[in-house]
Image (cartoon, rainbow, N blue to C red; front, side, top):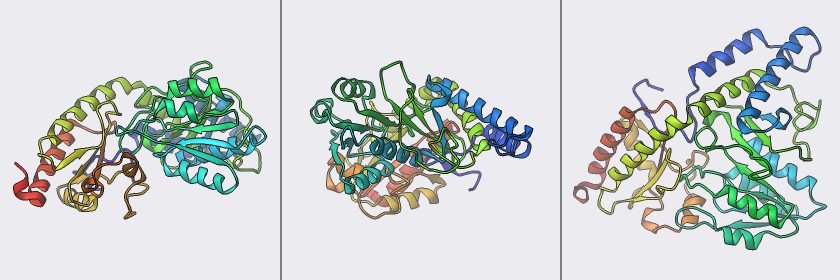
Length: 386
């Protein structure tokens, strides 16, 4: 990618932090032994692995034995959903999730439906937020799993996780799984005693770590079905030689993200307010899907009567990289399931764009986006724009 490109697609992936890359390379070069080996080099590698596990556990306020390293958020989500469902069938076969989950959750529960599980999908309002009353109505004695994402990846809606956890734990024996891929390192994410979520999924490449790294974390020890069987690594839940360099680099990135969270949140909030004010200036041609109550680092909006792909290509010619809603579905021609769930005006369904900030975003990037977008809108909309 060119050096002068303005990159505003951090919810799709982030550029790895230079210190994280240095850590990754160093571990690869010096501590490359298999951490399961009993010789000195293996013991040293395992010590590094355990230290990384302890660091992540500290950030999440749990124990090191409750941290399982994965290859990313999708695997962590699958591991939680299939692991809980298949070990809890004797308690019930009822699952609850939302209409706007990431495909790694929706496709997993869809497969469980095919296996005979019953799934309820919570609706969302115009702000992308679930109804706690509907959740209370849906929770049953035979509910075994509820999966609710913390921050929506397409429009930044923040779900009331703590209140949802209280409802779930008071009315069932279900586990609450939270997809925190878009929130960890940007919003507070941690376990608090007996309250809050039971299981959390995190992805490395969303916090300036490497692709192919992630974590599934547990509030306390739970019995879940092994996700990958074999040599019994990762406490028997995910067999296979553990990628120590990725784990250590993930722990480094996680610490950097959490330590800088307050400062970055303030910057993101100011930039989002600036962009929202800017976009509202385009008469009735731009519709904001994201709200001020959502995550400040994700802003989704739509342009009346235009396809998102046209806008992306036009902005790219001006040196600005953005995306259409989710990177996981951006190559598909159908309207996003999140956009459909929001029930917006049909004139705006095809022109959704998402801009998202990261630790390396600058004030100059925000200015460049506004200049490029104003130019593109003038070209595509002409006299409709002031």
